[in-house]
Every structure is written in structure tokens, then in C-alpha cells.
Image 1 (cartoon, rainbow, N blue to C red):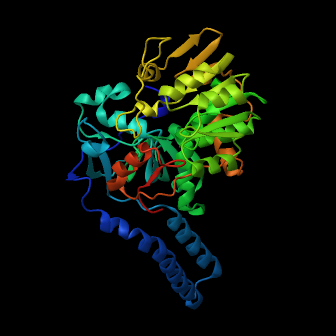
Image 2 (spheres, one colour; image 1 turned 45 degrees about the vertical axis):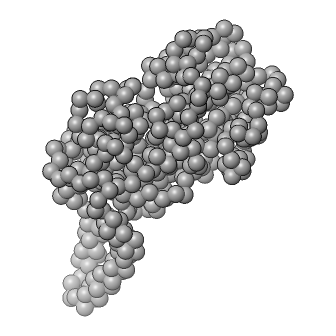
Length: 443
């Protein structure tokens, strides 16, 4: 299975209650605003009562300070609910909407090396969720499985930690696997801590959910597998998308000249702001003509996630010794808007892009050109010493926390498990900008 779609652990006992995807829960999410904004008022009121009582009490200052410290420690420890809801595929089927149901279960306990997370935000990985729901490609083993978990990536708050982990309750983490759930048991090794939840706003969880897979894919693909160098010319397709916008910025941070493709002027404006040197609106301009006239020396590197005609055009303009990083082929995904009418195949290899992508193949082509379908290949080439800038995940989050890397989240809001299918379909529509996310619950 491509590491882009790591599935994580189920980590939950057998469900007790079934709810249709579109039922109940609306009142639950309508109250999020009230809970979020009333909580500080109640906390302030409670603090005032505590202070007044302390002043009147004959107990010593030391005892009062100890009591307040204990209460602060209790407040910093997140409350753990007895039950939770999660979204599962009742069976493999046509789409997420067709198969998804909400199940309720008892809160599990983390084992050694695991943590229990309150999921705040889930990132939407349209390809993985589509093929997972259909039980196809890397998820073919799900064909005969019922109630299997959905959701590729997310961010949340650690509620409990098993032994053998460095994480603590209250830590804010980005994680991989089973993110369409209110609670999730996750291997601590798949989590990245980005601070304390008490210091974070909801937007930080949205952005870190985007970073965990989409951002990391761009960084590993370009810096480790593609071995990007200063002064190189790189083409990035779907450049305003969930992983493409990260690729634009990482390429510029490495001193490359960036050609970016997108579908609308609004997206083009964003890409220029992120540093793209040439933006091609592929519905208005012929990409091959632009490359031939403006970049006759060819492309050193390609970051490609569309497939079809764009894949073939990019490959045709790849210079000798160039590398093409295939991070997807969305124009041929089931349910994708604007599906490419050209066949999903390569005359050079006689294999479909889907076969090559899910098989993690590497194509060696004439002219010393290479196409990587497993863009994580560069991780294998690392020596025992860390690459420049530190470990990839640490480098990625350091770039984000320092403000050098922006995580763009589409402004269209999706809230609650009941809207997961809406979010997936929106991501597949081709109209989104940046990363599409699903807010599971309030912080």
C-alpha cells in the first residue's frame, strides 16, 4: 500500500448503536458554538468564586496556592467521555456516501505505545477514501470486511497515553489513520506533537491535519526522492490543491523555478502569492505550447497528481536525467469531476497509471528519465545521518511553525461525521483550493 494512505489502527471495540449518515447530530453540532463561547465565561465565573472563597478562608497562603495548583492541573487534563462515535464503511460499495454509517462504541484504553486521541479535525484524502470505500486497489482486502474504519489523517488532543510513549494528556498532535471518529486509538509513533492544546486555536488543528500527509508527501517527494536543487525548473500540476500548494512553497524554499498549473484565475492569484514563477491556466492555455516556447530547455522535475493528458505532456517535456514524481492521477478516479477521456495507460510501459501508482513502481525511461510512483522512495536512500534540515516530519512542522510554510485550508466548512461524504465529494469536484478538512468536534 502506498504510504500516502497509511490506515493506522482500528483501536475500538465492537459498536453498539447504528445511526444513518444523515440523521441526528445536527443539534450536537449546533451547540458547538455555544459550548466554545460559554465555556470561558463559566470558567471565569468559577475562578471568581474560588478566589473569593480563598480570601475568606482562614487557611494559609501556601495551602491556597497548593489548592489552586491542583485545580489548574485538573483543568489541564482533558475529560475522557465514556462513549464515542465513529464513521465506518458498513460494506464496500460505490462511494463514501453509499457505504458510510455512524457507529457508537465504548471508549477504549490505549495499550503500550498507543495514545487515545480526541479528534478535532480530519484531513480529506479523496483518492484514498474513494478507493477505501470501494474496496479497490490497496484496499481490496476490505471487500469481505464489514464496519471498517474511514479517514486517513487528522489532528487532535491526547486524552490518555499508554506506557512507552513520550506523549502526555493535553498534547496537540497530528496523526495518521481512522480520522473520521470522535476518538481514536493511534500508535504514538504515527503522531507528531505540535504543542499543547490549551495554547492552540481550532485553525492550528486544521492546518496540522493538512501537514501530516499532504505536506509531508510534498517535502519527501521533492527533497528526498526528487533531490531538488537550486536553479532547477519544476512543473507542479494541481498546484492549488491539498498537496500541490505545499509543493510550490517547498520548491521555492529550495531555490527552484516553479511552473504551476491550475484551473481558475482565483487559484492562479493564490499560486503567485505563494511564489510560483509562471502559472498556466490549463483550460485556457495549451501547456505543451507554453513549455515549448518559454521553457525549451525542458523540465528537471515534475510533481504530478492529475494523470491523463497532463501526465503525458509533462513526461514529454522532461529533460534528460529528469524525474517525474507521480503523487496521484485524480482525473481517472471514480466520481472525479471532469474525468479525463483519454485512456489511463502509458504506451511506454503498457500499464495503467493506477496499476503503477498502487504498485509503487519506478519507470526507467530512455534518456535517463525516471518516473516514481512511490514518491517515498527517497526515504530508503537516507543514510544513518539525518538529511539537511533534520528529519522530514520535524523539518516540515518547523517550517510551518516559523511561518516559512503556509498550510492553506479551503474556507468551505464541513462539520461533524455526518458531513464526511460531502467533504470527500467537494474535494473530488476540482473546485477546492488548498486542503479540504472536516471539523469533527469543538476543541
